[in-house]
Length: 442
Ligand code: LLP
Image (cartoon, rainbow, N blue to C red; front, side, top):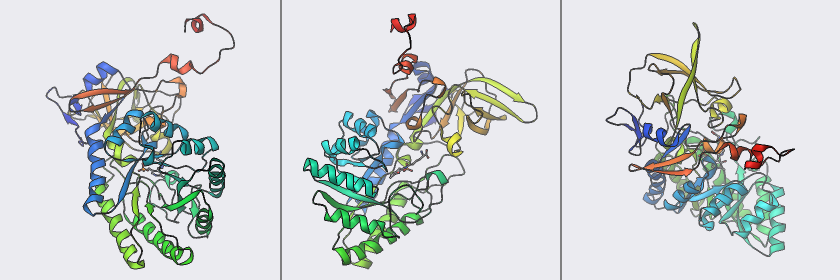
């Protein structure tokens, strides 16, 4: 078993996290249950920030809230002095509800609506990452109407193919995101933004992909961007005050993954920025990064109860858990792999290889293929590691399965931060065609 953060095995032989016994957590909150190791999130945040401080460069480390947007998480990000990346009115609303300082909020997205842009303007957020010409014109018009200025950063696609899963590769030219750096679109957008009396053209953003292990993609992006920044200084006297390099730093889901510590990615990015700035005789902009997964991914575990099993002789044994693609769609969507143990006996010798099935009516709802486990059955608790990023945030109600609750654990204390959805929640937005006895009771 690999020990993430504060995970340990306690004297009862149970898996513990944040000093709390996972078997007790299940007794109190039921299953499925998302559990976050708050100390590990803090440690990850501090390590990103400390590296920038060590090298003495001005920086903003933003939490990409799409990885896990909730009021408590946004408040934790604030406690750690992080900035916040939001990609929708809903994520922005969560930040507002959390009382997050709006000047540290950055708004992304390839199709922000008028309402969303107005909401960002109402709340005077830090900057808007403009993704395309449609948005550039729309934002300019809204600002003019409101007679309000806003800082903007242009999202560019540098034409890099990060080595990762196709669905989450975004830095390449053929992408729905951003202005192409090579074909003149970025330059045109820059001129357009610079001409505006309402938009204050602050800098450049790029995000080359997700779950990236090598630093080369980031350093090449920096080189390509600086080449342009030099040209743009010469041609348009443009000086970038912000260079945001996005997120994407990889984490360890299974023993197949070998990520570098956060500090190494950051150190290499800083070194390259300094090198390029010196080479072109440009000043060093404030560096932005937007980790999502690498801040919260390995701090999360999901606890499930095992229920039914099915043996296909000479093929495999299926063990079914009480969740699946509704609380973790990543295996079905990306063939993502996870490791897991029995939380009530994590150190027991493994004796068989089983496949963990979800409970949805969908053959593809398989959580883990070929997992070595000790003999396991009804009521044993399965702890799946590394589910903190894009687990809750991509959860859904397929088969009308209620979303699980989320607890934070730290120093032996547990805090419920999101309630379990109820069946009543599931029909809350439904209008019946006729009154029923059940409906009347509500
Ligand atoms: N910044 C931008 C502009 C992004 O598009 C993303 C992720 C991030 C930051 C954060 O990336 P991270 O550090 O978390 O890799 N649902 C997929 C991941 C989609 C990522 C989308 N953008 C998954 O479950 O793997």
